[in-house]
Length: 293
Ligand SMILES: O=C(CO)[C@H](O)[C@H](O)COP(=O)(O)O
Image (cartoon, rainbow, N blue to C red; front, side):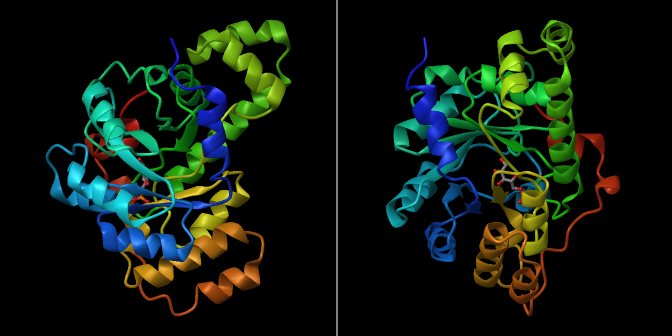
C-alpha cells in the first residue's frame, strides 16, 4: 500500500527545480539559507565534512535541531535518516519535516535493505550514482533523486561523474527497442515498467538534483549545465570563509547558470572556499558514495 500519492510527493520536488537546497546545523544557519534564496533547508547535526572529521557513527540529528529549524523558516525543511533506518525516518516524519533524505552521508543502518518509502506520507529523496540505483530507489518510493557525489570533500569530480553516467545510461535506454529493455532491466536490476518509463520520457520519472562536493558558484553552475534539476550544498557554504556570501552567490549561479559574466561577478571577493579533499586520498571505507546500492 502507498501512503500519499506519488503525484503530490513528486510534485513537491518539482517545485524545488532550479533551486539550491542547503544543509544547516542550527536556526541561525537556516535563516542565512532562507535569506540567501534557498528553496529548502536540510536540518542536520553536522555537515558531511564535519561527519568525516568526527568519525564514528553518524545518526539522525537531535530532534531539537530539527524542531528549531522548522520553527524559524517558512521554506520546506528536510532531514536525514540512515539508510534502512525505518524508525529514524518515522521519528523525523512525526516531527513534521517536509522531506526525508535516506542518506549515505549517515552511517547505514542496514547493509542490504533500504526503507520502504511507499509506507510514508512524507516524500523521500535518495542518492544514486547510476541509473540502476536511481530506479531501485524510485521503485522503493523515492520521489526525488540526487547524485551521491562524494559528500564533504568540496570536490565536484564525483558528482560530475555520477550525473554524466546517469544521463548517458538514460540516453542508451532511450535508444533501445522495447524488447531490448527486458534484458537491460535485468542487467540494471530494476523493474521493466520503470525502465520503460525512462525509455518513453527520455529522463528519470522524478527530478534529479546534484549533490556531494559542490563548493563554489561555478561548481553549482557546472552541475546545472550537465543537466541537474537543482543543487544540494552542504559543507561548501558553512565550511567556507563567508557563508552568507557563498550562499547567495551559489543561488545566483544556479539560477543563472549560463550567465558567465554574472557568475564571474558573484565569485569576486568571496573569501576562501572550503579546503577540499583529493578523492584519490580516500580509502574505500571513506567513500560515502559506495554506501547503499
Ligand atoms: O543531502 C546531502 C546528501 O544526503 C548533502 O546535502 C550533500 O551530499 C552534501 O554534500 P557536501 O557537503 O559535499 O555539499
